[in-house]
Amino acid sequence: MERHAGGALPADNSLAEQQLLKSFDTWRNDTGAELASIMPQWKNDSTNYMTIACRVELGGNLGTLSRYLYELEKSPLALRVDTVELSAHDNNGQQLTLGLEVNGLALSQPPAQPEKK
Image (spheres, rainbow, N blue to C red):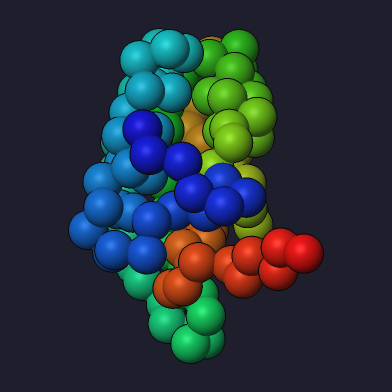
């Protein structure tokens, strides 16, 4: 996976989206969570950067979903979790759905390098 300054996603929208979706899928494979849906949407926030907002819905038990959230949080990617929603689908709370609002940062231009003396 290509690395960028501070974990930022690539400036190219399709590459950034591909990298983010691949990460979501890797975390799903690593944790056993059931990925129900991902809805990415680009926001052009500034001339220097863009953000990709993703609504992610996952299914599983508490251990599986908390592990998925842990993997997302420890990722080197420049991601921010804005909202977390947890809901039960049975009386015992064994079948859960985790809804996340995740924002990823993509720099439009590389950060300025300090001048060499």
